[in-house]
Length: 400
Image 1 (cartoon, one colour):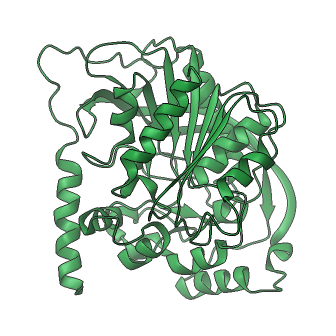
Image 2 (cartoon, one colour):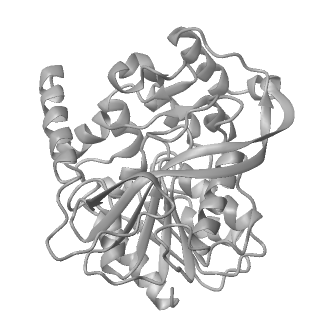
């Protein structure tokens, strides 16, 4: 595919991606309450099953982050060399930059979206949706036909999605010392507690289900480990305990300074904020042919999210055995997931089943599903709906 063709596809896809967002609320429907949000806006979900309120949410959070002896790279050459040092076998790079722990705390602006059924019903259960690296909150509501939000709403749940710290319209603090896994776990936990305490839209949710993708699954899993009573159930997508393919995953993304790669979107970010280099990089990391639309890949490239050095240095350090979590847990992966399965989630064993056995000894129920011929970006494949149906069935079977 030529560069001009790819740019044309990206433009068409980006236009289609945004066209169904921010439309008028259908006649006869009441707008949801905007309590808990600043600068709120009201819009339908991209498939139209939900009426959503979006805006900023203030979250006070603190965590023991890692102190890194690592200076902000001056240019792209230093960025590339950093990852070469990180992935080289026998390298002591990680040990060299580790400098102990330090407490990080603050008030952070988290851009968020709460969606309720368009039919006016008030769900008793809400799903807290945490996206992974390379995306923002709209991974969960990407386009008509590619919206987990629409599916969950149709099953009777509310959804709360958010841009993780450092991503999209959320706060973008120091990308090395602040935007790290431990603090993001604290933020996710605080958001779940706020949902329980009727902070948003005056909605009284009696149960909160944690749903994550990739790094968002690692964050969700860490909440079940460190705060076992926060979630009533957990759904982890694009996740396992296998870290052997992180090096080729990082290599395939060919990470570039975000402000250089897409200056029209990321000009205000410093050199600690990175994005995947190109649509080809995105395909390597997140897609598996022929099970996706080229327009969806182009849209994913046009709307890709940033990642920080702090996140990449801590993504493997936040998981832990959730010995005291007693709710139901399911892991749902594409069977050809690259970063967490090295392209084969069934070899030499079912890596989703192995992760549940290792991390959730006290779970009341567990389940796994491997979507066929599907890469890491599960929601952006033709097989997404079957994965959603498994999640819905699992939650209903366990009365969630």
